[in-house]
Image (cartoon, rainbow, N blue to C red; front, top):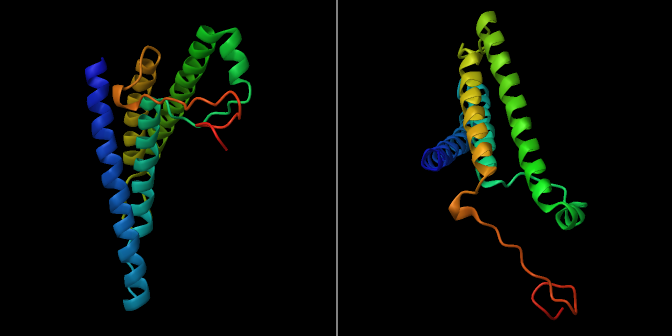
Length: 174
C-alpha cells in the first residue's frame, strides 16, 4: 500500500499543479480579453469552478498524505505528556472518519446530480463529472489517511525547532 499511495500522492500533486496553473492562465486571459477587447471567454466561470473543485479535492489528498491539516495545538502538549499514543491514534482516526464522511456526502450528492441531469448554464457540462472526480479524490484521501495511521510519506517529515531553555526562543539569543 505504501508504494501505491506514493504514486497516488505524486500524480495528485501533478494534477493539482496543472489545474491551478490552468485556472491562473484562464483567469488572466479572460480578464485581459474582457478589458482590452470586450469579449470574455465564453463559460470561463464554469471552467474556473471545475478547476477550483479539482484543486480543492487534490489538496485534501495531499494534506491527508502529509498529515498537514490545519490544527489547533492549545491542549496538544498536555495530551502528548499524558496520553501520547492514544492522542496520536485519536487525532489520526478522527481525521480518517472526517474524510470518510466527506467522501460519503460527496458521493451521494454526485449520484443525486446524475439522477437530476443538472448541467452548467453556458457550456452545458454535467455537474456530476466534477462530483465523480471529487469522489475519486476523496477515496484517495481515505487511502492516504489510512496510511498515515502507520507512517508518513518519507519526504515530508517535519521536525519542530527546539526552544532554548534560558530564553524560550528558538535558536538561543533573542
